[in-house]
Image 1 (cartoon, helix red, strand yellow):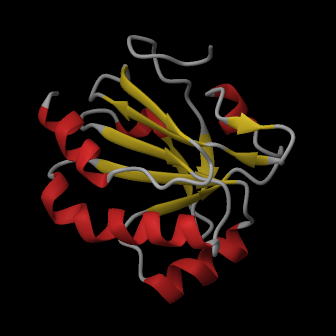
Image 2: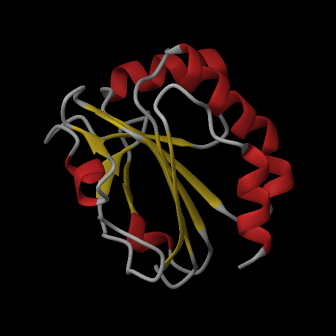
Image 3: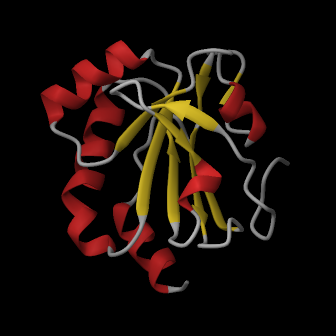
Length: 149
């Protein structure tokens, strides 16, 4: 069942694509869109994160954190290539521990599932959405969920 709407979001600290630590609880005061995805450089993930990057101006005051099991080195190369305007966090080691804490880890594949959590300014999960690993998420759903906060 894992983390659901109404639960306090499990805290974590992960390094971003530049090696800087990001702690979820340190971002209180504004909403956070926490986006788990399987792997950098894959087709669906690339298109999905590009669509998210294009939507950033329309999303308003939200901190976007994306999380995969890739190393910070792979995330840095991908971020530099794609010029993503948000943090790409590495859940590399312990392998997938943050995804596991959110029940967003596919143990058979060893990657995060395509799960999204909208966390309010006080650290409470307001929405959880999971889509099949082969299907991109709808960016318009992010706008609608943020508008409902």
